[in-house]
Length: 340
Image 1 (cartoon, rainbow, N blue to C red):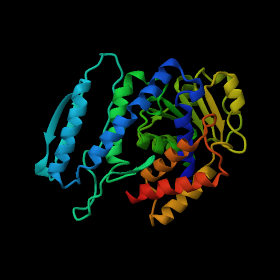
Image 2 (image 1 turned 180 degrees about the horizontal axis):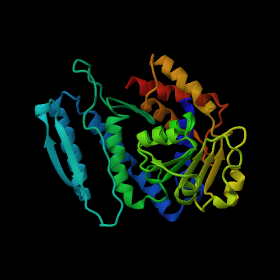
Image 3 (image 1 turned 30 degrees about the vertical axis):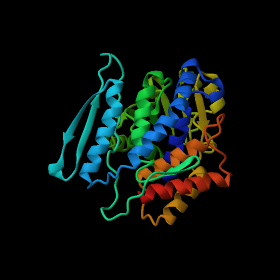
């Protein structure tokens, strides 16, 4: 089922996010204030970028976008170079590097300078109506560039563990477990360890870029543990390490009860009753049907996951599955993703 993997992804995104806004740390409060203060500047930059026609085949327009981004990046201390590629039929790449400490974390951000639309498509400009805006590439291409730039402004103030840099353990590599592992890899997660009694299942995980492991090793080393084995009580309470995220998703009985995992030090814990595909499949299928899509893409699944994550109340990992507004929002996100 396509929706269980992205339901797990939603839970992970929220579980690994900083604590509830009502209990922000000093660093998190400073970050939130900076994001709010930067919003007008970011929106103004977004409008400027969107209003520059930069269709993929408009090489001059794409080069102008590169120049705009250079002007933003160089004052931040980046060394910026332009790699022309006109001989390939594309404008080129803008490469910005910033040297840090030798033992510091490394960060790679990728965004599109161009906007993908046909040469004969009428060019649309940035248009804002209240809190909503539209325009060519405003959500993905140009929006992604602005978000990346905002991340660079706030990088030194980011705290808490992040999904993409966490070590993830997937216990149980059947259809659900492998689906979760595959989607997490597509999301950009680096290390995914897997355990299963079937050697063929471990081979399939390795083919996805995961690592063969054991239940004991996963519990001892992983930041996040996801279990989809169907084995009630598989995870012993004493194996839980302080700060781990535990998603025991087997129904009707999880590998460990969430309350037990929390009592033994887990930062967050949930089971398959709360992290359930019922949150996803109505909107997934309706969105796909409305877009006349013939298959689900990772982009469609990611769009659904992100939208559901956004709709979760502060004190909960996921929103109410019985809220019709949730399914309508997922439908719109999937339809939009399929149209890209």
